[in-house]
Image 1: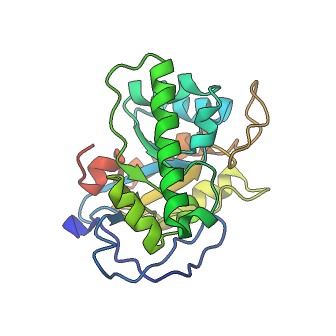
Image 2 (image 1 turned 90 degrees about the vertical axis):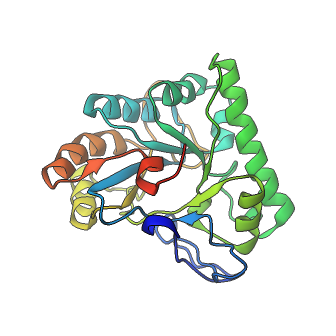
Length: 255
């Protein structure tokens, strides 16, 4: 469990979860949790910003703009199905070119495959292939190898852990999630809730997409909070002595 980064998560074939707010649980047997990460070291004054369920057109574009304005790098756990449409190739390429980290969040955002070896292996493979094809279409030479997988809803089962390990992926959970995906949430409430909980080493999750939905190509209608939350969080965290660091750096993992 190097440098306090890895999870001492926990439990079995049955998993507890509520939307995207509660990580799944596994019993730490047979080294299944060896490659599961939840947070970085609390001795390092930094946090990581991560984004799930994209890419989602203008919503993801707005998040990338906000990160660029703030001069920080994030991690995007993309859904293969959203990438495979071909509508977001430029965004995926921009993530790579601007130094952000790409991870996968599965292909379809379904939980059932996480309990079946063949299905979860297919989800992982489809998502990786979709990202590779998108980067190829966008003309990205020598794309980075994806090393992070955040299962849908954070659900970790023994089947998921084995499939991820076989694919050479590290499982990443989070420590701060405040339900920014819930209808009616305001950016003031979301940022205040994150700031109330954020501590050194935390992995913060926001959402730049809404599952596999992308209801508009012209404007952001699915997840409008994330970009403004970034603009407010980065300076507020800095005022508390917390730098926004790339996820690989925070976890002590070679990208």
